[in-house]
Image 1: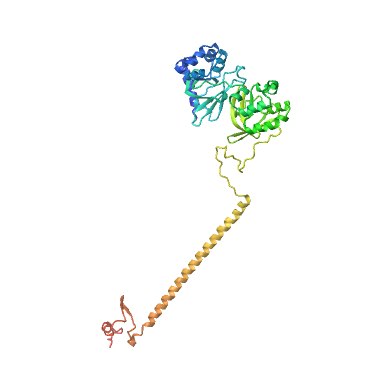
Image 2: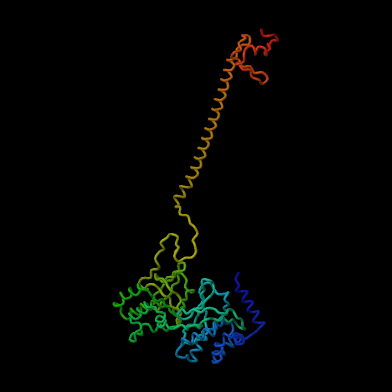
Length: 434
């Protein structure tokens, strides 16, 4: 059952009944005292939170601020604190039960161009975990967990989190801090970051709403080193620009199979999705959704070449599925060829007919054997009777030695003595036997 509509109705009901403003609700939670202190120190933040409606506040706990401050030097300016805390205010209400099982990106109130160059505000990512509890991903893949969930106030929700979010940095700072060493080697090897050649990439690195595909494998570095020495400055710029898509925030949730994206270089790249794996031309995305100040970066496993836009290699199996990346199990399919099906349609009825004919012959043979056996038994019985009749001699001959006489179910044996038998016998015609 989808709990999101029910939760939203409850939220609307409670909001109208209680009608508690955000700051009042925050003061009821002692673990938010540090956050309240920063808000009260800034008229900009106070005005934002008092007037904001339809928002979700990601409020770091006191412990989160303590950890953050211990790693922070020098002290942040007021402008930096305002930028940081406005990044914790999201446009829209996001109760935890309504968060998607797939990555979901929400816009924040961080629109200061000194820190973000993303239309409608810098993004945070809601990322589901294995046990179903969502996490929040910010700059440089920093992870925050929920400490206290779904606190209602008039105009939205408070989600208390255990770490302070990290504002996404620029592209060149990200690849350094994230230790993307192969990307760094390609950028330095191509002279993209040198002061003399900043015109190669600067126009791209600071454009708003960008999607970057960054090769970050040993194979990609080797391929680049093989071609870079023979490339001109304009060709080097074109190679980098072919890895950048302007005017499109291509977070993983926005990439669709078959999508054609026009790069800064001018040629297109093609998106292909197989199961849980996404390809850009023939390059596989190995890590997705690094948030940067002006968009998003995806790490890929090989260089993109505008002269070779071939997609991923064909799948090895005939069913069109990739068992290493696809979670769903394909339905069993028949592997019988059309010719075999025709042979089966003819052979099966013939086989059944032959089997039936064989059974009929077998039954006929058994019946004949039984009939023959019955006839043999009858003949034997007749012969036995004839033998018995032949052994009995005429009574008139008075010869009783080989005669067996049956009378009223009693058998008189020819072994009896003749004298004894004569005494018990009665002549058939009524006279005595002499």
